[in-house]
Image (cartoon, rainbow, N blue to C red):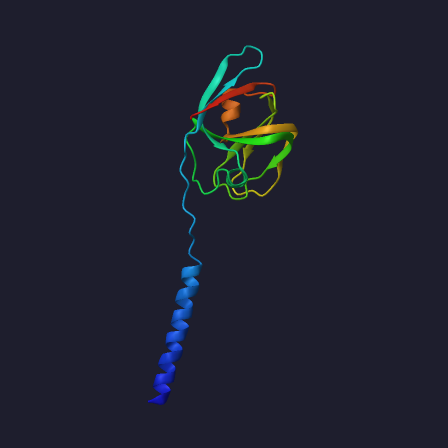
Length: 162
C-alpha cells in the first residue's frame, strides 16, 4: 500500500511538471493586423508623376521599429510600413522574423529614394544595408518596386491620419 501511494505521488509530480513545462512553452504571440495610420505617394523624379499611392502603417518608436512586420503572414499590395527615424544615417534591416518577402526602400531626409533592397527573403538574418544615409525606410511586398519602376532619386510624400 505504501509503495502504491509513493508511486501515485511520483506520477502526480511528474505529470504536473510536464504539464507546467508544456504550458510555459506555448507561444503568446498573436498575428498583428494592419492599422492604417497614413497615406503615402511615390512620385517619379523627372516628371513628378504619381507612380503609386499606399495606405501606410507607421513605425516611429523603438518597439515599432524593432518589430516592424514580424508576426504577420503578409499584406495586400496597397499597404506598406513606413519607418521614421529621428536622424539620417546609414541603415540596415534584416528579415530574421519576417514571414513574407519584401522590397526595402531606403529614403533620405529629402524624401528621395537612396536605394532599394529587392526581394528580401523571408526569415533571412542577412543584413541588408542602405547605400547611403537614410532617415526613412519603406517596406512593400517583394517585386513591387520593379512593377512600379522605382529608381534612385524618385521621391515620396505622406500624410498621417490624425
